[in-house]
Length: 196
Image (cartoon, rainbow, N blue to C red; front, side):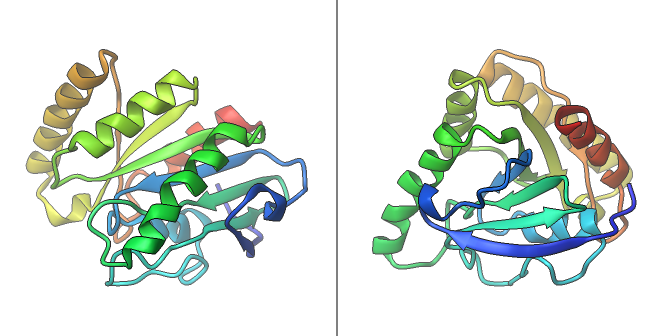
């Protein structure tokens, strides 16, 4: 997929501030520091569209990016070990839940995991929530360039088994590297299937 046009549109904390255009939306979710911004930037071929940071928890609002005038990429705040004030953390849950429950334009959630980490109770609880609400989820394992090919494939099998047992459903995660571009075209194919 060749991206011709991608731009940041707005940040929002509540439905009244979401874009009012009737375009399909793809939301990106994952723990802090899993590489959400790097994934978005790689997909649209722009280095700094979504701001990356070495400090977890920098995304504190819901950020909307318009891609090729036909889809919004929606960067949701990361969760987990982000070092941000507790008062802000308490707002994140309701803000994200409101978006996920109420947004009719939402066609797909891309759930991102660092391939080196094992999903915890927060991850599986959120996945159960997606299943409860019938939200389509695409699993992406990031930072595969940090491991050898053999290690990546082994970890993929381990995570497939772990998540499948937790959710009682089969999953097929996509291996992705922002450094090499591995997995980029496969992710675009899945996005196109659900937003066309």
